[in-house]
Length: 195
Ligand SMILES: [Mn+2]
Image (cartoon, rainbow, N blue to C red; front, side):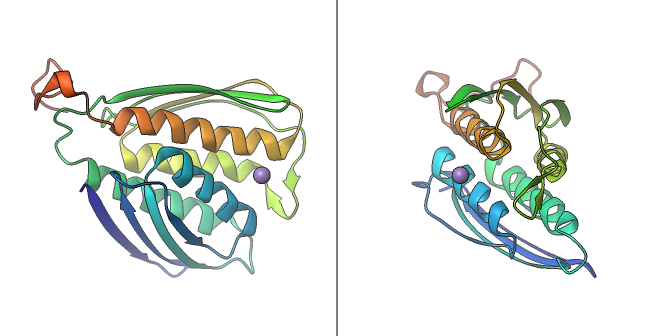
């Protein structure tokens, strides 16, 4: 089983993340930010990566530090859990439809972080949640997970659907990328000799 545990303690947030890449999509995510928990649950459920996440952050200010730092910790856990990447697909993509919305993700677990963000929201808030934090989360995940992460909104008019389709689309693409390709045997998905 490819598992990792990360704990991260700063003056702004205290976070623990446990993941299992070879899981069944079982989750227990409690960050103190309700909408964000809903998104993390989607990330786990549709990637089949088991996740247990706890965050105690300075949400009396706003949700920014908590969302960003959970992104950092999940990224670090992912980097640790994929190990040497031998036999792994490495690439993943998924165009996900949700009612009015379609979000397409293409990603590469390349260890070369790069976020291409082509997604906007019609509203600044989803309930009390700032929609701009969705980008902050994926920026942190990309940087600390070593992911070339391209997220495109194809269309969509409802902010809740747009955010949720983004998380689900990334989840499905991650599911593909971390999966083993039996024909690769134990070789590295790169001609460079390292990844
Ligand atoms: Mn929802």
